[in-house]
Length: 197
Image 1 (cartoon, helix red, strand yellow):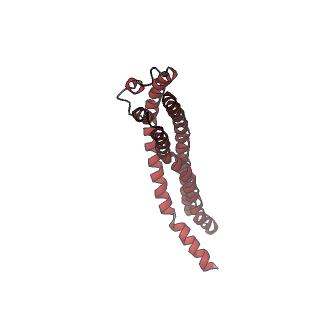
Image 2 (cartoon, helix red, strand yellow):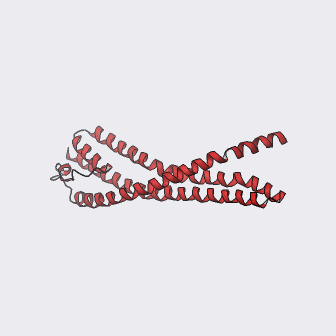
Image 3 (cartoon, helix red, strand yellow):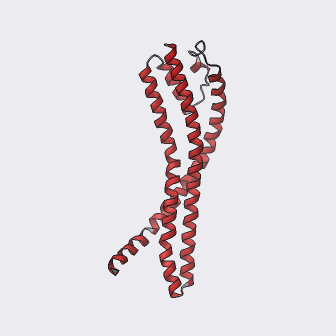
């Protein structure tokens, strides 16, 4: 029995370095996500204001010129799909495929946020529990320095994991709201195009 528990202990302590490395990578990815998120936020606000005016005034008379009224410099995902839908407005099958493709593209953009939100707490908890074993051993043998070091590692990994998860959760929530709004607009456009035919 002692042999089996020793094996488990070696495995768990051997996982500490990979867990710390993964947490550092998650932390760096979270910082990159913050930067790209703010850039995307500015672009989305501008595009939302533009599309709100266009879609509020959209009717059968000005529907055909919708793509021409959109700025050529706007490279956002929803504007790109609006242009493609206007090109394939005669085919309902193409319109439905484009709507599905938009949902897949949105899910791909959300995958980083979801990964951070789920993996951050998992790795943080692993990074917390693994050093607790050596910390308790240090406490039982009176090695306060070893115990303090292991507790420092445990708390640091928890904080980094929770920070990464918080960034992933917040950006994921906001982006999900953006993409739902865009999906509603695209579905409305598809319905108008089908009605026009």
